[in-house]
Every structure is written in C-alpha cells, then in structure tokens.
Image (cartoon, rainbow, N blue to C red; front, side, top):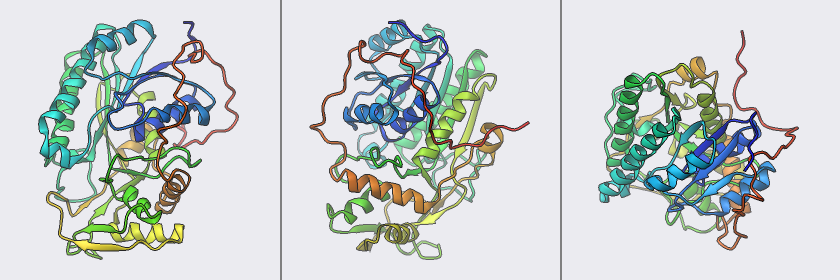
Length: 375
C-alpha cells in the first residue's frame, strides 16, 4: 500500500472511544494519517463510519486488543507509524473496585506490551491519556501538575502506575518523547451532532445521564450528596468540551520532540457544581430535569478543578468552549441519536482498496481549537 510521505502516521489506541474518535477527526483535518485499533469492548464499529462521513477521509481500522502483541507487531510492520496516542483502557471507577485485576491486566499489561512493540520498531513518540483521577481527593484547588498524587481506586492507580512507567522509560532512553495528559471531566459532543458519548448500560457520568433523562430514557437523575461544603451543597468538577480535549492531544503530539517526559493538565480552570450543570442544561435545552438528592457516593471528592497554566505555556493550548456550548452539543447529539450509535449501521469498510492513507482531501473549512504560537 502506498503512503503519502508528507503525512505523519499516528496510531490511535482505543480509537472508537469518546475522546479518541473526536481526536481522530481533528487529526484528519490537520493532515495526519491515522491507524486506529480498538477491541470494541465498550464502543461500536459505527464510530468509524461517522469519522469517515464527517472528515471525508478514511482511516485504517483494526479490531485489535492492545494486549495482542502479535497483532500490534504486524501493524507496526505494515504501516509507517511514527507516533502513538494511547487512549485504550477501561475507565469505570466502580467496576475497577469490583474487578481490579481486569483493570491491571488491560490498562497496565496492555500499555507494557504496546511500549515493548513500539521500542522494537523504533517508534518512541507517545501521548498518553491519563486522568485527573491520579490526584484523588485533592487537598486544594486549583490542581497543578505538582499537586499530591493520591488515587483512591484501582482505575486511578493504573493511570498513576503507568505514568511512573513512562517517566522511568523516558529517563532510561533519551530517544523517547512522552507526554501524559491529565484531563478533567470530558463532556459535549461533535458540533455536527453526529458523534458523541454513547455509554453502555447506565451512564457513569453526569451529562450522559442528564441527556438520557431529558429524552425520556430514564425517569430522573440521582445527585449523590447535597451536603458538601460548596455553595449549593453538590460536588464541583472541571468540565471540558471533548473537542477542546482533542485539540489538546494534537498540541501535545506536535510538541513531543525534545520534551523527554512531561505531565500536563487539560482543564478549563473553572469548576461547576452538579446543580449548576443541571440548570445550564435546562437553559439550553428547554427541558426540565427531574432529580433527587441521595446519599453521597463513597470516594467522591468535594471539588476538583484544574490549573491549566502549564498547558498554555507548553502547548499554546487552552479550552475555548463554555458550559452552555458543552451542554448544547451534548443535547444535539442525544436528540439526533436517541439510541446512540446504531448497531444496524452499515459495517465500516476494511478493504485497503477503499481505505488509503494517501488519499488527498482539500479541507477548506475546519475548526481551530488552540492558539497559534506567536514569536
């Protein structure tokens, strides 16, 4: 298969996930070629169709688990991959408590195998999707990259341990260029309404639960705790638009060379309470959200919000979308896709006669979501 020499080729693990799929759209718009893998444990093949339709370009996709060393080796042998954005990993806090070994096997073992295959093929450029979960119940906000790390569950500990692994790897070999992005609470959806968050079963996150209540799939929202020491008694989080996050990953990718190992927060720098999010959603949607305040959920921090200063200084990146826009885009996605990605969508094409990395597309319009570096 011929490949354009002018386009960098990026491997995206967990490619059909919420954040990864939005990142792929922007990578294609920026002129990158993409090889994507996903074991489809918590996502759907239909995401690939939406990516192709929205970008007018195709990606190479393979249903590969990152623990499959042979399959990874074949990918790096066949395709001229020169960097990796590593999203793949299980992420449900409650599930990680119930089945920690599933998380240690998938998240840590999978990352170890990926790194070994990358090293074998001389590919040493990596952006890792970490999480603000590594900070645990932060002692003070805003949270900087120097804030204490105290993850309170197996999911957070896998992210924390992987960060240590990556730091040690970069220290041992200066050819490695690695950035770990600790991002805060991703919400929103693609502005077209054609891509968004499609959780399996009962949503673990606030916004998908709200949108499912708004559309009538669920009776009401349960708010965990109304007696926290905040203005309205509910928890405070730093919500960030998924498209802003996608732009942050690309900014990190483009800033890898010469960095060694970096850790960078991606957040807006502003916290919103659960009730603020509900009121904002009601404002943009015109739908009243019935809710009930119930007991606190074990392990929930009172407030978590970022200091994004380093992201701006190092990556020339900052979040641009406000909470109203986040809620509006999430609602548009839910309205247009009441059942999420449809299981009966036509299957994605996998023939390399159809998916060519050297396809040339003129992107005359695209959204620029980060600042331009100035002299």
